[in-house]
Length: 412
Image 1: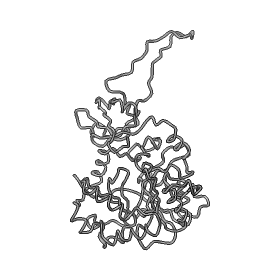
Image 2: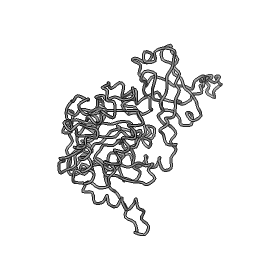
Image 3: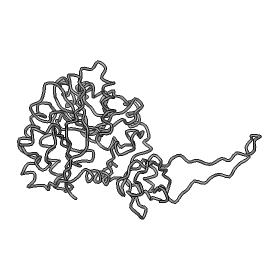
């Protein structure tokens, strides 16, 4: 299937109020405050001069979001109305949740104060609500369960659609000030580039899924809608629109190597770079302080990222889904393929109570985090995968081969 749209199960938390931008900036890995350091005029670059204009953003208003890409050679920071990918960490720098953040509503009319929707995996909604309320303290914000919202995902794997998304972002979204951002969002809606005008009033959140460049479109509506009624006729004249299910969206994501925290068993402890945060457009390097920032930035600047999550292909000569049905992946042990640990012979100990048998134990070589039919995700050593090593696990009486790959969209 080259294209499709499906309703997907996501949960939303609304955070609004005069200090909503400041509050969220202290919790997420992307930028919501300018944090621009002024330099002497004769040393300032063109991009830094543009960054100084961010100081004019009135953060107490419904201004939008700051978009940036750490691999952008021009180091641009855009002011836009569309959503973006981010992550929330704990004080030890470990992942609490990955999320999408939306400035709401996406287009006019907008309320006077900042209002954001945080999109999270449904099984973590209660935890995230509690986390936000714990961190609120005296911040002038309101935190609400926005469970009435509905979420849709559209993809189209044709080169024409990728070119179309590039042009759309350049024309309507790459803006440097709040007024232009809102004006362009309204123009994007009124010209029905994607959405039908009759559906526009229901659309409160919109995002290009740029975790992988131009991977898809995310739409948040105030209530469930017929997915086919979202799109304008001019869009459907250009691109195929076919209703599919969430499973197709998930399988495509697995096939392209895009991991989400909700894929792993609940409670799995992961670091942001193990989840490839630096590759999926969810990190700002100089935004200032946020929970978990110290370890994250120190690792990026000078540390060694020893492990990452890789997409894998699973094979065992039978239905892989059946083999893993009902299996707790936390109990699955992964080893190198065609290699086994051997016990060292028992040695005579210095203890008077006879010999002690010592076994050479190797640390876990990898961890299988998710399985979707014959695809999955594996947390493994970067060196092992770069050296072409393969893995295996035994489930019941079945040996499953695990072959990792490096996605072609990863930076070199």
